[in-house]
Amino acid sequence: MFIRQKTIKYCLPREASVKWGFTLIELLVVIVIIGILATLAVVAMSSMRSRARDSKRISDLKQIATTLELYYADHNSYPTTITFGSPLVGATNGKTYMAKVPTNPTPRAEGACADLEYQYAGSASDFSLIGCLAKASGEATAGYRKLTKNGASNNFGPVAGLIEGQARDLGPMAGIVAWWMLDATNGTTDIGGSGTTGTNTDAVLTTGRYGGANGAYSFNGSSSKIDTNISMSLSASDFTISAWFRGTVPVCLVTQTRVVSPYASDFLFGYGSNNILVWMHGIGTGVTSGISGDPTNWYHITMVWNRTALTYTGYINAASPVTSATVPELTGFGGVNSIKIGARGDGASPFANGSISDVRIYNRALSATEVEALYNATKP
Figure (tube, helix red, strand yellow):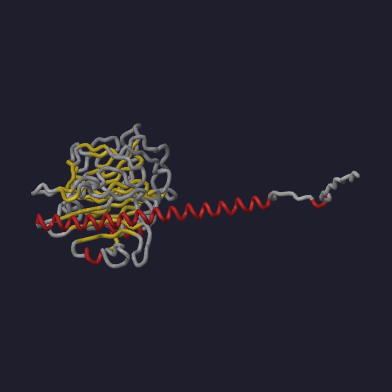
């Protein structure tokens, strides 16, 4: 007897079919979430790197300060200068105290800090070591810290190893487009952003306004000059120039001129003829401050150019401002020649005869309050 087997087919009804996948809205939501997480990760990583650089700065400054005390124990004085990135060798015993003095980690221009190397000055009995923390942490605020012999124990205080030293104010920082410290640490390099190193002709390092060695450049009055190798079209908008100077007159401190004529100047800035002179030179226009210059004293000279009013205001040690009358419209003054320090814009006489340091150019007009703050922050 044969039994016929039946094949039974089972199938789902058409309306019960299953489809797998994501809708467009679901995909967009996932993409947005991933983007947010990636952004948070990048921000967190950037913050971690910045704090890591701050940690290295703290370690560097502690190490340098400790080494300076070892140096002092052997020499009964501190080194007058140290070169960051190079060995620190004893002046009399030839002993190597540091195979390589640490340098400020890059990027240095972050948070509260400018693009500056560590700063050092030393004497027989004391030293000054300056660094900067980009971010605040605990009780330690962001900004510059100055370590000295007398303050070293407090500077390395108990707050998680952070530097508790005296904060150093460098004056207004917003709008700086060029900055030459003109000292042993930074030389003739623009630390205001370009990093361009100027070409030095016959200017030599000398005692700075704080009394430390190699804190300024000395100009001989006949051939010394620094070609910054930078050109800027400044007179088309507001700007401010400042510098510290000690010497005799007449002198060009910071200048830029066109090739067309030696007197067709984007700006000439200096002082001369018995009185300190703050000079915006456009078609022979200038104004004296009425303050006699003493060649043995340091003077902080500032010139503020107001493009809208076509006026410039001069300050000597932030006091007795002198404002010019309206000057002619300056057209075509792009500054073909590069900016010079210590000589006319075409590199000719009058040359500076004295010492210059801390030259700054801002791309805005500083207020009288800011000029005073700049003077107070940088005065001896």
